[in-house]
Length: 240
Image (cartoon, rainbow, N blue to C red; front, side, top):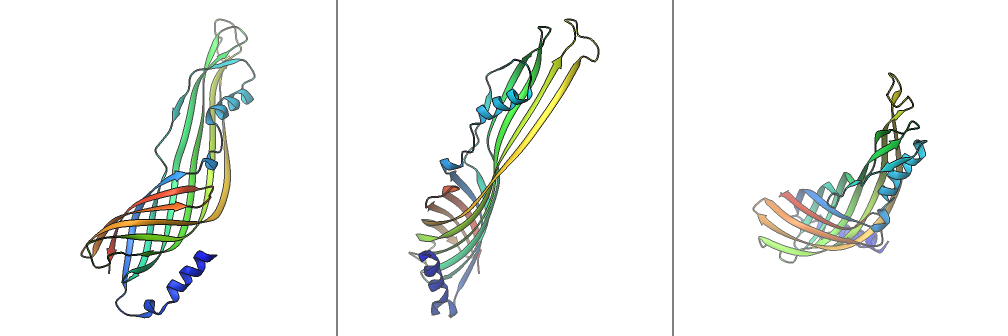
């Protein structure tokens, strides 16, 4: 609540009604460090359990391959209004990124004693969007290179998506495989976990202005959240 009151005061102060305002539109690429609370499942366990639930015979799961991408990223757009050393801004960001993936090759033991191949995987991905309202202080507003602190609030919505996929063959024929005795079975399952919240933040920025163009880096640290707790944004924008 105190952040909302501060932003309302900044936006309602007479300075915003004066001339000589600067408007800035920027596009950015955000890098998110995700809260440990966002680890929805142990993917290795999820993949093995999914195979165990759907295969009615013994099998061996070979050493899996785990794909761990970099911190998830989002695209953002923001609009700022600046006057001397004070500024207020609004931004929107969207994310659709794969978090983790675990895959295993299976060796399924058939009743006749031979073995059939199989494959199981579990993949976790994250879809999210957020809107942000904040204010920042510009230490050197008339210099090409400037910096300053920032603060604000962010409303976010996210979907953790868990996708599991299983493909395997079964052979109920004799030792010498009979025609039509080999069956390929495919099973897929998708689960979605939704969450939303409001997170206050503090941070700072550095930027370089070249006439009407600017490039910069913003870093924000968020309070207790089930979403990202740190966001670094590389951005470029136009001033008018």
